[in-house]
Length: 225
Image (cartoon, rainbow, N blue to C red; front, side, top):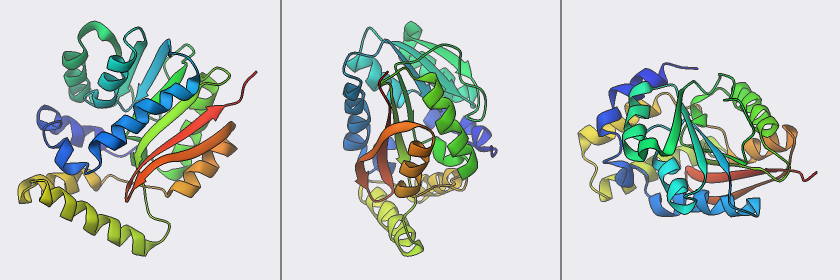
């Protein structure tokens, strides 16, 4: 793992405010991730949020499923303090990197948003296998992620589009510079590779449910008993 947790800790207090500017498809991106949990076929009883940060995705899961037990992990303690303040006693908070063992117990669903792309590809694949092992039959893994293009020409276009869209939404030079500082820790992988890794990890079904340039929502489902 890189020193990304320290970088994000330094921005914890002011992390959420610019999210709608820096994630151009904000509502569709997070909305699709929460909607994907319906593929479980029943309300989830226990949900793990990996790299939960300030709890932006977890808060939306909590609103949709008020009875669900939430467990949030992140390697940046200051980010998790923001999540604790937002969620109150609604969630269990665990300081842990994405490379660490998952919290104990079985989860109906595992979710993540804009975190796993900080891992090297081999570590992504190892995490996918650990997630699959933590899920019951028909359990789902939802990864709302920043992805690479299938060719460098797409990566260049994605970066140009991202900056232009953020600036149209109101990002100034300082805000975009801060985003680029955080994105220096990115090790993005393309959608097709990640879907293949999910299948190789043992998910019987995997798909991309949403994609807008470099923002995508990927889903893996563990086979039924």
